[in-house]
Image (cartoon, rainbow, N blue to C red; front, side, top):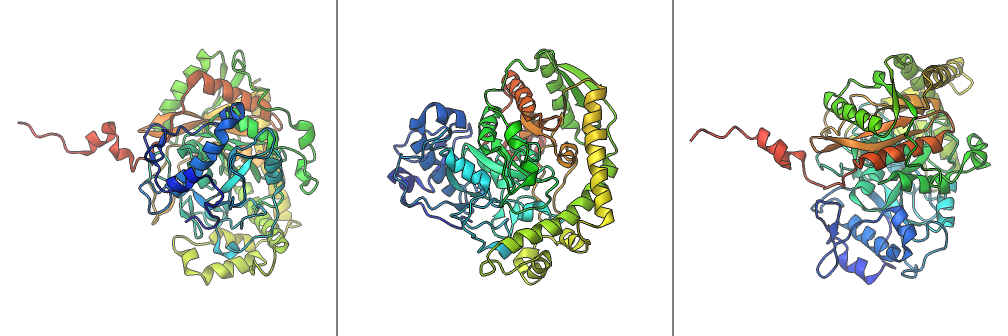
Length: 536
């Protein structure tokens, strides 16, 4: 459901082509009769050749209109489009991202669109303010194309959710197989970039919400060090773990975007060091950065998907061939204890942080002023509770505040186990600069009855520690993409991006999304699903 905005103000081409674009199965699109085949450009390509920007903006709008519910390829990644009426065609604000179309996850505020976090309780939430990261994008000349769908409330409402679904936006589907889950919570951002609807999107993560949908949709996703990017005016879960980050088709594009959105925000104390820590992340990319570099293989983060592990083994050889020195790490920190402490922290911070956010909204637009009000609203709104419950909300509401000794102890435990005694200790003891592991397994089938079928992932350690985590495409399992995670020390964002860039350039594992209905359509899959041919 495209909830807001019009196609007015776009070029005549976009108006003519809206709803008519069809994918070719190789990443390109046919935009209608007499239109040239459209190959979605990268951010770097748009910067190198600014004359591509007007066509890219028009094509993006056409592709969004052609992939909504009821279309032949119902990806349903975009929840709202910007009203670009009044924009002079082909004239963009100057800056390093001049004319580059960017999509934003719909928990990030913009002055010109409502911000719903996928919840009907926030359907009219339009406080008329840009989040600082959005202001940075606009100042760099980017065009905010619209908002992407997400797992409602960034997937914190229930542990039995269907990722990619929100009451406002409906269900976002995987760009490589429309009957597969897009993961979450930045589902629409991952699917939209994979399908070429925009060259880049901004997602947010508390634990896995950038890297999982990026990996499962076959693109690059980067969760920066917590504090590198402002969280002000983003619907929150946890001030300890929340961050925004870029989702793109290439590591270079992710580095370009991070260079723009990173920086200190006086309203977000976590970003106090950001100006001193940020750099030109694109300039820091080094195609030879793997040579002679010691990298830890986090074996304790494997074993949940045999097919993914097989791709991982091939990837390890590719890393060795690129000159990396791989160090086996078979034992990690106590993940069960980290998970228990993280859960306690998230429950307490969700209540405190969401209450603070709701209090900052306009009461004429948002009548739910507290988490307790949202719980009551959901109970009274059948569509909200149609697929799963809100048991996590209820547990969060029962917490006793950030002065509670249980919370204080859990936060100290989670930071110690994941950070100092986790990532930091593994890096130092093994004399490595980064850890690698499969990001997550391949996409599972959409299951609105039983919810997600989530087997395992590499996201929790860097999420809880607040450290950088990059996922880069590493290969495919039965036509479904899987990603490789690079995890580093706090503020080591530039090095992690550079290592991922060198891996990406050495392997070229990225393949464009096809928007096929199902992997059953693949010859190698369909042939074994059919009965064996009868003997003549």
